[in-house]
Length: 194
Image 1 (cartoon, rainbow, N blue to C red):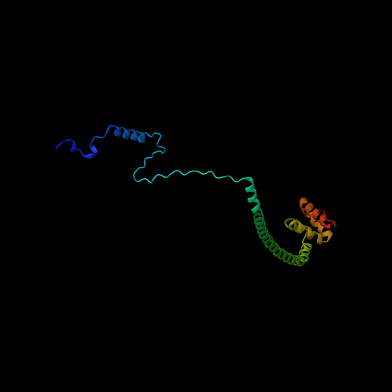
Image 2 (tube, helix red, strand yellow):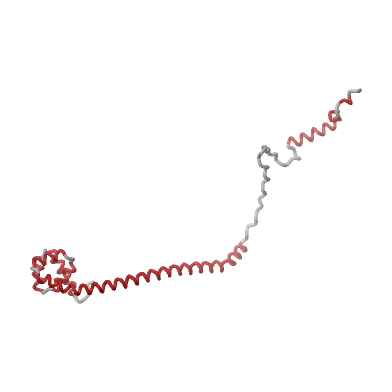
């Protein structure tokens, strides 16, 4: 048996031209020559497959006429919506004002009722209080009136006989007497001092 036939078919000798062509082709592929345009990326086992980069498309910017048309198309709707919002806000404000006005009217009625009761009480008590101070000794009356509210003390003194009021003021401290006299003088004026 001859030895040349013992080698398998893929190990047999090839012509030198064929080997040279295969070497040039392999060199071109592995060297990244002019025939290759893609970049090679290594992917690790178990990693997700590489995603192709997205091509960015440049959108055409709208021109001025398109923008103006869009704005003019929505202008009426925007104006109507703005008016509706303002009307709703005004309704809410009006409701709040109405509620406050109602509360003020209730307070006013309550105050007027209280004022009428107070005036009736003062009219009844006034005569009694004046009579009490009229019957007191001047020095005791002066001492008590110095403690009382100045407006009330002045009102009591004005209701007393002028002679009795003068004696009581004479018994008072000078500062308190001066204050009461000032109040009585301004109350006796026919014209509003302010």
